[in-house]
Image 1 (cartoon, one colour):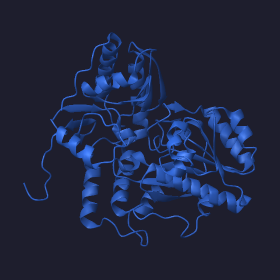
Image 2 (image 1 turned 90 degrees about the vertical axis):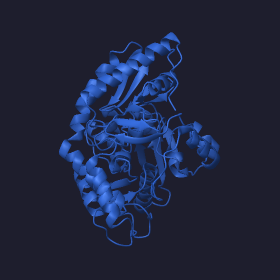
Image 3 (image 1 turned 135 degrees about the vertical axis):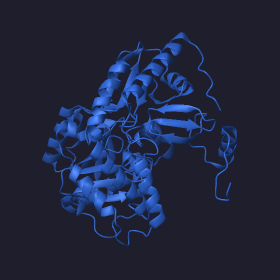
Length: 415
């Protein structure tokens, strides 16, 4: 082994190092993954898993996609970083592709994560609102149950009070209303100080709750009437996940600002905030920036990811695969409903069935998913998932639910 190679390490060694040296902000599960291929993962003991979470909807083309891996490796050997003080070859091409997918007439700002994309959207909406409506036009309305990030500002926009309590006082200028209730939003928009409405087409962390198409259409109408911007957070839903390129397309509307991240780099950190050109023009040089955003390595990955997604028509694949997965989940005793769009789904469990216990049993059986709420499982497999893999996952979920209902203990996850 050369001096630059990483020696194999056991789960126990990793747990000890983590406990001593890493901030304990995560409640980690007792598994350490070291390799992936397509929809499969392998842990430190070589045990194989079927991945139906995709790193929280990130690896939409699957793990170690060969074309993406080649693009990353080639770029790493040529140029990693020079900063946004200079032009680089991939960033404009990625922006042009995103603009085409979003209908044209817009511009993108590149960053490193979904939270940063939403931070950009918030700053841009405030700047636009104040330029066109005066200094008091800076307030943003979002929805209860939403999740927009962990920075102080995006946390203030997130409609989950339990996540906010520890970090009060949060930045001001944000208000939340009930999700998918247009009358409540209409009353909130009577405030002349509102510059934008920020919503998710599907509330991911809130439990996989799709916004009804008629609701989004009504929101678009209200924003037009009140001259407020409509921001749609597509960080989890964007780029094929819902069966269309973007979740808002199910409602046939067009937003003013769209944020995205997760699937854009297939695991390489990159986010983007797209805005209509008129809105984007509110930013001038120096108004917003990031050192790493849109750097050559990340945009090389994104450029390849988008090319593969377009060639393989991943939205259509997600729509078809989602129908098969939904039907399979609905056939399982103990599942009383399925909600979501495409391959972002939640299996609602019968009363009394603990979703966390079921998810733990699935992991012990070699299936990765998560309990998005106390009584619902979230599934977000790669968009290239095969029919046999879907059927395999459904069988494992059915077995895990049955053992949970019987009160049996999950098999210990091998370590």
